[in-house]
Length: 209
Image (cartoon, rainbow, N blue to C red):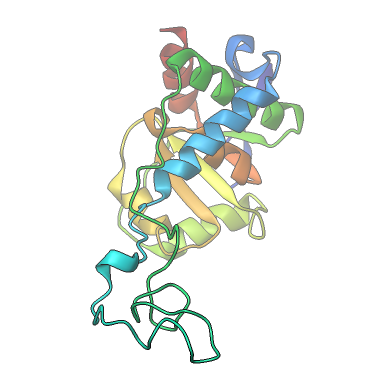
């Protein structure tokens, strides 16, 4: 798949870049995408939730009243789950939500996500660029020139660039990552995926391994 390369002003440079079919035109696997996104979201969970059980509540274990003759139900300790302030039955406990996925499955999921974006014409290739300084207005201008002001954008760089990353950090609809950080969730969550010419080569080499 051949696409035009744009500059930071949104104008065509006359250059073209070939998006390799092995990455951007595979047979999409929806179940692989589902598993990869599920793992990504599960890994974001801290798993620090905790509710006290009956044996962890601070309080007396004295029997509240005699067993029979009160006309009411039998009652033991005030720490019983039946009373306000008592322990919770089967409450949440700290746990690790992460789980393992094979590398080949994760790779297939990322390829499938990129393929869907390519089919929707939601991939834009930019020439390699840099900002002279850290200014949010520079990134706002970049997105505006591309007519993506109201779109969620994901910019993929071949390597870390602090000027570009820090310029985009305060924008809710903009995210900047490097090619080795590319994940299925971010690709699908973005309305437009912005690749630089350098990141296309980096992705092709990474998926070829």
